Image (cartoon, rainbow, N blue to C red):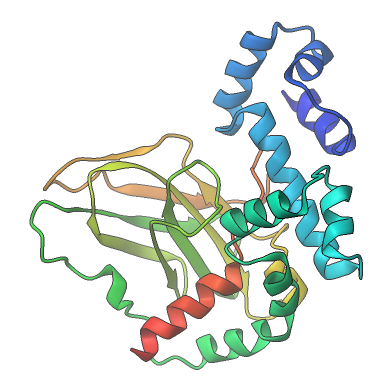
Length: 256
């Protein structure tokens, strides 16, 4: 799998049919697809499309290419389809994402000035049929910053989390009002000294993702979660959701 992941990253914009990836390590397509999903949590083609969207984020911030040019660069012939997929998985349109660089520094300063990080969105719900997910997040390396944590519908941090919040430091978290269903716990960190580009393109941040889904039943809390924030690994899916978008929504809730 390491060989395949290296191959994908080195040939990201080449045609990438499943048969070609399987042949690279002499596996049958079905056997390869099963093992790849066990390793990454994603199908091979979804993993490839995720890396391409991550590359589009880079191009939006680091070049003056038009959005149409970027769409073609990452292998998407239809500008409309590219814009729709980018918006669904990043949370902002390509234009909004490109423009967000000018506000992320101010958002970080507002967070740093908060007296309380008690998020009203994670309080106890009124419905007794809903449950909760709680746990603790610990880093493997020290850092001076905050944690973004969420429950996602897929094993990749994309789109808006079904439940999400910010923590002023690693430690305990709790989501109340979680409907019965299947969720994936993911988190990452941002340091106070980071520049806007690093916050928008979190490629080196500490992170964690649950290899196994969290199954939430009615009325009863899910098993306690113990997550370790680690350095990025080659098989980690990219963080597609715009972190400043989550920061802004958290600040809006705190302002009430």
